[in-house]
Amino acid sequence: MRVLYSASAPPSAVELDDAALERLYATDRDVPRLRMNFVASADGAVSVDGLSAGLSSPADKRVFKVLRGWCDGLVVAAGTVLAEDYGPVTLDADRRARRVAAGLAPTPTLVVVSGALSIDPTHASLAKAPVRPIVVTGPDSPADRRAALAEVADVLVLGRPGLGVDLAAARDALHERGLSQLLCEGGPRLFAGLTAADRVDEVCLTVSPLLAGGGPGRISIGPHTPDPRELALAHVVEDASVLLLRYCRPALLH
Image 1 (spheres, rainbow, N blue to C red):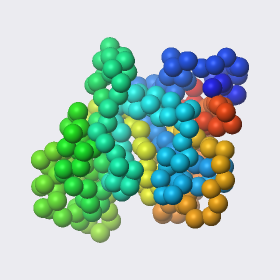
Image 2 (spheres, rainbow, N blue to C red):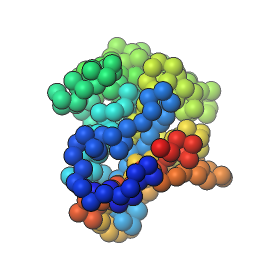
Image 3 (cartoon, rainbow, N blue to C red):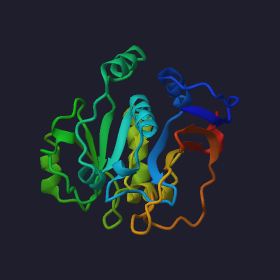
Image 4 (cartoon, rainbow, N blue to C red):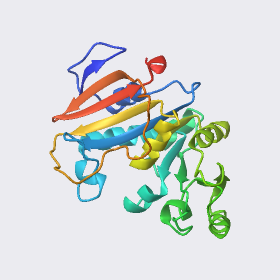
């Protein structure tokens, strides 16, 4: 794994160890942000056989762990939690120790976004979470489902009737709770919704050297955004033909 391009340093052929990789993806914790993380094929597919795992690689998994280890809150749509069979958010002992030494919680807080509250409170991602999770929903969600989920999670009801979850308000509410650095792992509809709400600050995209063919959707599916959001390239990392790209708002480039 080597740096092909960096906006803040010259490229290097030196193999990135874990410490160097963490520095590459580090952010200013005094500046709240929401970072997206996705993997896609060279022809733009978001999955193979319905799952993102078919596009992953050792390099992608390394960055995946670094991003989870850095964030305060891990934001995921309920559909993705169910489709990808999420378990409780856990980190290895070394990453937990480094977080504690930096004054952070040992593990990030899981934040599940769901308009219909289709996820069951007994789901392992919630029931076995090492930190009490948060469920974000809208006012049209079933009251009985909210009450059931409140047994295992903090439930935030944000938005207006008929308009679904207010994602802009959700991001702001999470920041107010001290979850400054948010990492979103999808799915595509949540990505599109956050983009439409202009709440995406950074995109970490792994491009897998595969042609998946027709069928799978894009990493962003949903409401049309009339004004494209400009991003700046922060770095490009390469490993065995896998490209790991990091884009961010120009004002956040470092």
